[in-house]
Amino acid sequence: MRSNHVRLNCGITMPLIGLGTYSFPNDRNTTELAVHYALEMGYRHFDTAKIYGSEPAVGKALNEAICEGVVEREDIFLTSKLWGSDHHDPVSALKQTLENLGMEYLDMYLVHWPVKLKPWVNYPVPNEDDFEKLELENTWAGMEKCLEMGLCRCIGVSNFSSNKIESLLDYASTTPAVNQVEMHPMWRQERLRKTCGDHKIHVSAYSPLGGPGNAWGSTAVVNHPIITSIALKHRATPAQVALNWGLSKGSSVIVKSFNQERMKENMGSFDLRLDDEDMLEIEKLEEMKIMRGEFHVNETTSPYKTIEELWDGEI
Figure 1 (cartoon, helix red, strand yellow):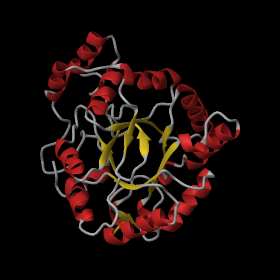
Figure 2: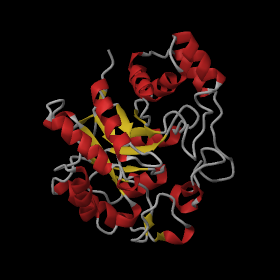
Figure 3: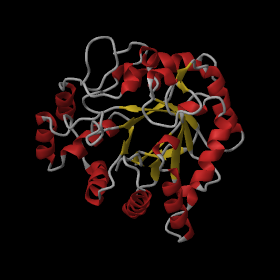
Figure 4: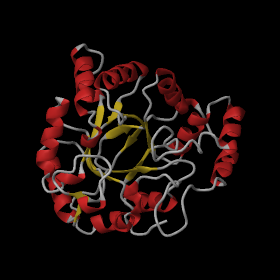
């Protein structure tokens, strides 16, 4: 049976399926219930971020479960992220996150985006004039300080391109343990996966189903005839096929559904075994991007990805 954990370059293990806790609108009670249901189903990896607004709810539910003896803190893998307006002081930002969560430490702290925002920008989709010049070397030094202080067990990045990874490694004393990026059968991230693999950086996939239900997402992955035919062949669901594809590539997957049936369905992706023919068929899927020198997922993508500096013009 395939292990449901991966060992990271920092020495700790991380569950391969995590529950993402971004939702809009953010409802605290709904999030708390989802975390409790997830724990009952076997989820042990929870992904949050300052900008999601879900840290208090995630922390409350986890602490309740710990107090009730449902789970030990050591069995939980908890991830949060440094928002762009906090690049000047990652230590203070992480201390605030820990206060929000009611936790003494994080298992993983990620730089959410390789962009710096003005201090008052606390909304998820910044405007063009909200950006400041990023001194990533200073940001990463602050992340390393968080690690040295014991505020987190590992540090990593999110939404970093191959070029951004290579640049970071020029001065990093600690190699990122994880790069969390959008990845699914129609945005396969071949170059980025190779770059990260060369440096033993684990790739974690968010929107592993293509982001259905998100403003920037699409149902094109789970509705694609190739995906649905593979699902029929294995008596599985399209979502399980998409998730198992990511797991088969050595990635972890962050799934975002608070629907109990879908949460169970997503965990069932561990039981699926895609064969070589399936993998070759998935490679035939056209990648959802616009070929004009910008990094796109689809035509309703997040405005973050229209900023040339962010993605180095990579395709």
